[in-house]
Amino acid sequence: MISKKEDFFLDLKKNVSREIKIAKEVGIFLKETEKKENSTNKKEIEIQMNSLKKEFMEAGKSVIETLEKMSPSNPLNPAPGPIFKTEQKTNGEETKNPKEKFNFFSGFSMKPRNKIKLSEGEKETLKRIKEKEEKEKIIRAKVKRPSVYVRIANKFFTEYSSELIKKWTFKQLQADLVKANMNFLLKSYVSVTLLTTLFSFAFSFFVFVFFMLFNLSATFPMITLANENLAIRFVKTFWVLIAIPVSTFIFMYSYPSLERDSVGKKIEQELPFATINMAAISGSMIDPTKIFQIIISTGEYTYLEKEFNKLLNSVNVLGQDFISALRNSTFNTASKKLAELFSGLATTINSGGNLPKFFQERAATMLFEYNLEREKATKSAETFMDIYISVVVAAPMILMLLLMMMKISGLGIPLSTGMITLIMILGVAGINMFFLIFLQIKQTNT
Image (cartoon, rainbow, N blue to C red; front, side, top):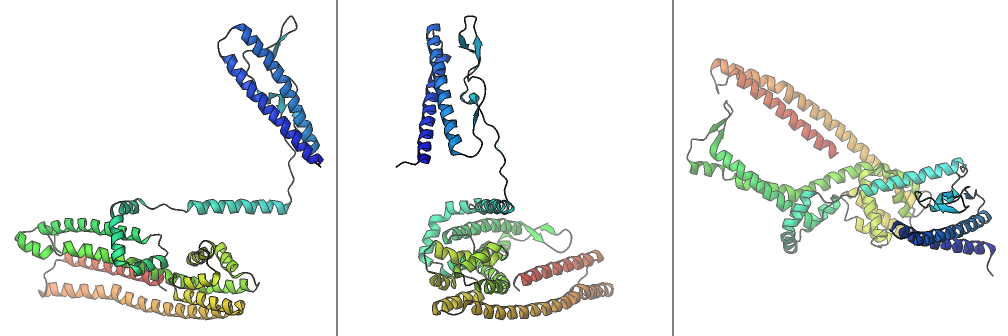
């Protein structure tokens, strides 16, 4: 037994199909009118067009009547006037104006519907949906392609890198890349290392040629032509060809481990506060995976977010159970404290322990350790301030006085007043740069 609602849909479908069929036939006739043919054919086409016009109007009225019965909203109303603009002849016959084009929808007018009034709750929901869509667009925009430098390295060194990986495996390097959250495949990073080493060799060659031909001195002019034998100069400067590429390769190989240590320190700075939030969330007795999802959604923990995403991807993408994912994540994180948290959480869940109590105890312990580290950092800053005052303020003044006294008395290295001043300025600037770099490194590691 078919309901009335289904009958309405069948009628609507039938009439719309009829309109589509008429529209296709009208399109064919319009193409025929554009062709240069005799007047007899044109008159027949106009007769057919008038007939199709009437059928199209009838189908349109049927569609409107069906919609009026189905929808409580304002229906589509037919606009007054014919579809075709016609001219009235003296004999009473109507003919289509040849200058006017056929328009299927000129016989209907879309009246604006009444605006739907939304409640405050509905407006808030629409606003949240829009914000969520914008966040998803931003996340999709964050997906980055490999840089041009990486693509060039892969193009020239992929095969050789694959052979090296098969031969030497680079297990520690691969583990450091994962723990440091560096977006590199092992093969790509080895290719980048080889390309950088090649560029450093080219740079070392130019440095070698420079030192073969020129001398550097502390007095003006600082750069002078070398007068020594080329063989002697070669013996003195050939080490440049080896030292720069080797040091570049060592730095590129060890950089992931340095980045791993830096990331680990930053994770441990965020971990105490994130654990406090996790303790509060776990009190609602929700699924443990939801705890990590809520922490990620806050966007307050930049480095922990990456670690938690890796954990959830192991569950949602790789299909691991949550306890196995926690235990595997202990080997993929740069922070020992976070690894201990994952291991303890896996044990607590597996044994049916109390999650809120577990998180509260871990949060208290981590917060206590964090406060101790802050106190150590404050005392270290005071010590560095005393050293800075002694080295940068007092030492240059004393050294400058000694050099001036040695110059006046004729003892030591004969230096002009301008050279002594230049040495002091360069020395103070170098010490300041050293302290700035040291404090920046110390700050990122505490």
